[in-house]
Image (tube, rainbow, N blue to C red):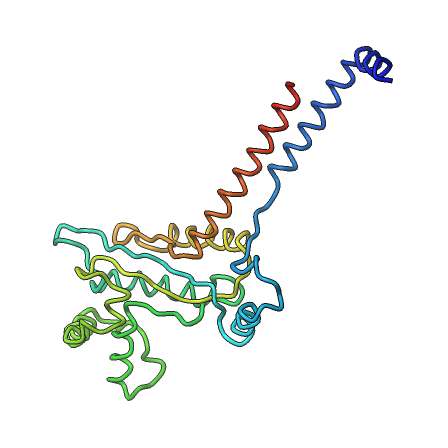
Length: 239
C-alpha cells in the first residue's frame, strides 16, 4: 500500500504541488480576512454573577466599557500649552460633542471632561438653566470663570482629569461593549473627525485607556497565533 501510494504521488507530483499551492493561497487569503472581535468578559460564563451585573449595566446604563481621550495642549510662542486656554477649551468641547452624539450608535455616557466645572459655573450664573451648560461665547467671560474655579484646584475631578501643570487632560466616559472590531471602526472615524474638525496646531488628541490596551493586546495575540500556525504549516510542508 505504501509503495503504491508513493508511486502515485511521484507520478502526480506536479498536480499535487499545484493543488497545495492553490490551497495555501486560499488559506492565506482566508487568514488575512479573519476579523478579531473580542469582548471584555469573553472568558466568563453567561451565568456568572459578574457577567449578569455586566449585562445589567449594559442594558440600563451607558455600559461598562471605558472610553478615554488624552488631550495635550501644544506650546505656543506665549509659553507652555494650557488646557484652560479659551481656544483649547473650544477644541475640547468639539470632541465632547462628537463623543456624546456620534461615537457608536449608543454614544458615550457618563462623560466627564476638564471643561465641566466651567460649564457648571456658567450654568449656575444663569439661574441653573440647562441651555447654559456650555463654554461661554466670549473669551473674557471664560477667563473670569477659570479664575473663580482656580480656588478649587485641589478638587477630585481636576486631580483625576488634568495634569498638575494643566498642559494635558483626559475625557472619560462609558459605552456598551460592542466588540473590538466595531470599536476599531469607530476609532478610525474618530481620528478622521479629529483631522477634519480639530485644530491640531493647538492640541494633540489620542485615544487611550485600559479597554484600548486590551484590544491591542488581543489583536497582537491573535496575529502571533496566526503567524505561528503559518510557520508550522510551512515547516511541515518543507519536511
